[in-house]
Image 1: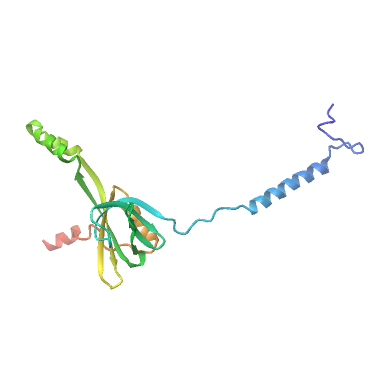
Image 2 (image 1 turned 180 degrees about the vertical axis):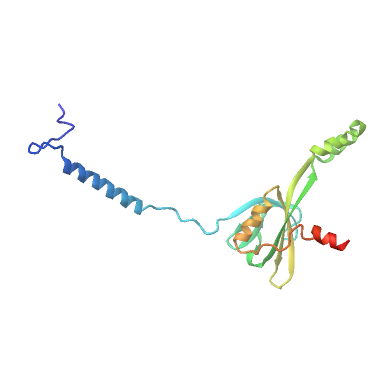
Length: 193
């Protein structure tokens, strides 16, 4: 009855121990060999990074206040409009990256008319909800003739720090100037009085 599932050795009475051990050894060796030959995909050292941005001013061969894609590819910071060739600056020429944060009122003319028509000064409440925050990214770079230039980009809130981090990982030295460096510390303010 069990002859289909178990082979029995007539002389010793054991159940094919050597064949079972050999089978396990073969499976173990093939498993180790498969692990040794694993093919993990090689990662690029610096994969491309891109975000949607508005070029406010300063980038070469680009109109002011135009939308496009700001990207860090290979060794260049590029801004590309939809149907136009990309303008780029080499990352090696970038001397500083500065971050800022702004807000602007959205809604245009209808929001302004709604604020003006609101009774008893309640138009201020409309202003509270009609503001949108965004980040500004200022890039300071040197051109081929040694002239220092700056370009300003507007990106969604929280994305400017990602661009700065990407540029720093690709070799741009972190800016020595912090936004708070212009303000004297409390100890300096106390000594001046």
